[in-house]
Length: 239
Image 1: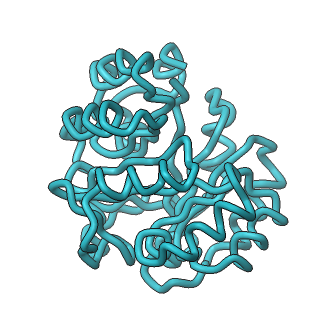
Image 2 (image 1 turned 30 degrees about the horizontal axis):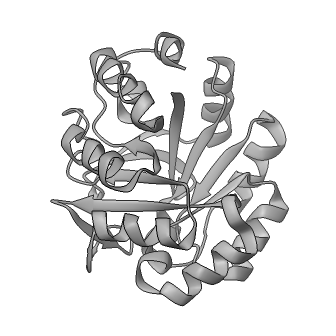
């Protein structure tokens, strides 16, 4: 199970939101590159970077920071937030992003989704961001007509083998991951899953680690690491 530190960018700073709410933000650092280097020194093998400005506006805003992180860390990473065109995906891959995370456009435009998969394959991954089983888009501000399970099944039909699943109601709360939702997606789709949202302690990681044989490939961790609930070194025993 891959342990993936999250770096959420807003206004060039590293922040965490509570349940994705932009008015409930905590700034952890004004130096994202320093944070990325710290996680790499702690043993991170992969980074998850989100452009929150891009997620809300539909246009990536923190590419200069991203380029510097790529140049100075040397570890693979995925990047998401406001990526809504084939051209934007190509640009990010050319910058050195390992995998591009798609959300809003993927959930709302089936033709775009199919084209993106045909062109980029596993260089893209879809993030299903859900609350009470329903998909949210546009920086988690707009309710989609899709359920998380139905969307996951759509992805499988297209050819995707892995997805990111975030329970918005858990994200940034330190209240534990959505174990029921994760188990349902694993059971009903047979897809590989990266879980995100709610991890609060090493016990949560232990519970998630027990789902490896069912297809849980990794977990994205944010607030628990930034708040010092455990260290990345401690979490790495689940890698």
